[in-house]
Length: 327
Image 1 (cartoon, rainbow, N blue to C red):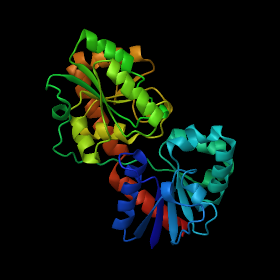
Image 2 (image 1 turned 180 degrees about the vertical axis):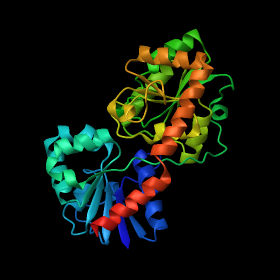
Image 3 (image 1 turned 60 degrees about the vertical axis):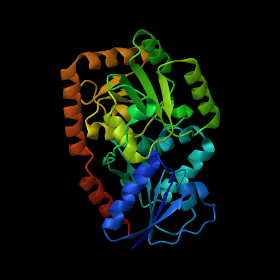
Image 4 (image 1 turned 90 degrees about the vertical axis):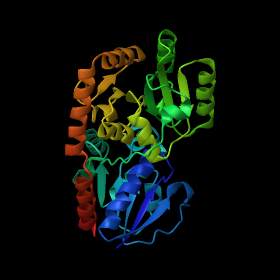
């Protein structure tokens, strides 16, 4: 079959990572997959295919709602965290979920929230956890940024935009750096919002210990994670962040902001650490750095969790079965 895949295919984004993984699953099952980048489509762009998968109910759905092609919608974080606040976005999403043959959420939290928004679509909802695959390159973040082997590196993979809130911990870590110059925060991500990117650059110019690198190719980002003392997430809202799962898969401790999308993956004190405030982050980070056994326990449990609940084989089977069920 010819499957249309609608997503935001921008490099170094979770949307693209998810889309490419789903594409690979379908191609391995013998399907032909045609990519439709939603940032370059017109509302009247014809979607010629036997079936379609759209990632993000609003972003992809608005191009599918007038199509006769049977389609599956995969909810993204923006769909349930941000779009319901806008009546026009909500109107589009409601039309889309009603027309969709099936709806996919990455975790139970998003499944429940989708059901509350659209109770009439309960029977269409399916939970398919994000899978994870990592293959690091030989890239060295420390060498590139001039960091020593014994420097403490907190790596924050995040696009420069408000919802990712990459400066949430910046003042706390800059203060920590003045007390211990080995401590650094490295923000790695694309400039998604020009105004916010300027804000980040200004902060970095005025404070030591905070470094920035543009979005890294995926394999280089995996390599950068392996050189970090911990991988962070500071977002205001999330669904199922790929970077957290990837760090867990690589055996790197994760310290994440205590929001529903992160806490659905990270079990505090078991598979990672959660915080609500910058001060709480420092408390958790200092405990991790001082306690080798804690780090080993977190990473061991995290890897077991990812292997059990976020396997490629399970995700591949789920999407193949779901596609077969709607045709």
